[in-house]
Image (cartoon, rainbow, N blue to C red; front, top):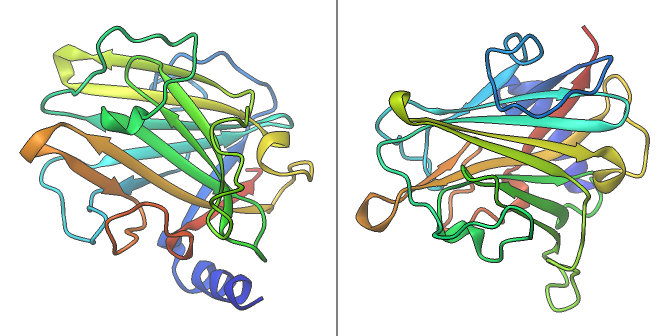
Length: 227
């Protein structure tokens, strides 16, 4: 209950801790196109700091969201200088340790009483993916990569403009047993890993203030709304 009250206070006191997701009356194919009719007016937040809260030079990462009666959609817009891509990508199969390369990540939880339980979903510029069921309180017995959300992803690289896009379509039943509805709230952390070596950057919307993204106390709120 302590963390539930803390997160409710956080959302009320700091609008920047909330990503609003607007309702779509229809589901749509993944194109990773931010200028499409469905994405161009979607609410967004930005990630421009590292996991210690320090500013990252250059343009920020932008994350947009929409939802339908079946799915939660996320779109990551990721400007880059150089991409760190996995050789021989295989989007048809799950890619272990995808975090070693360029990737965008969403950590989503529906249990406000047990915030250490959440799902981790990733997408790469090459449409690679991995989804995990995380339980920080019981790491030895967590399902991890054996879990299958049934989500789909789309990565797209715009090389002339040095931006890559990562889109996710996540079945609601995979992240919340309750059907989605107006004003429903979930906990969410939004992150990106970019580059390699000395230029490697760790973007966070809500910096965890430690050298790991797995700090559920730092997550923000995803709120479903129907304009």
